[in-house]
Length: 150
Image 1: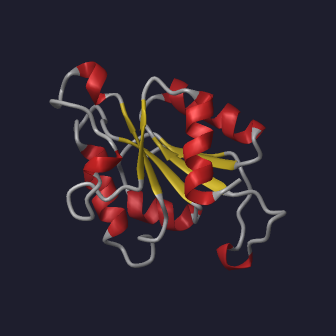
Image 2: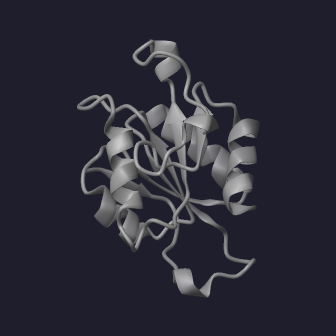
């Protein structure tokens, strides 16, 4: 498991408006993670990342993020993002953390149709919102603001 922590650790119970919100990215594509990290840091967020689907619950618990950005597909499992979302949402200590799911499946043609916020389901697809790849920074920031504010 490879993680990248580009921010300082803090107490989640003692957050104030002056403390940047922390976003934890789980995506196997290093270029996408780097691009998102640049945009997010430029907009005042703290960022940490993980590039695989190993030990997700423990890593999220250790990072204590305000939001998780989670990719759907990983090389070892094309639906790993769904599995990780279910693990997170079934964990009492983590289930309140919003999940923004990244999806390029429409471009790859793996699943029929498109995922949208209408497809959200607490058991099948327990995420808060979708964001389509390729990423548009303005759309990403807008969805993040909707979920956790600035």
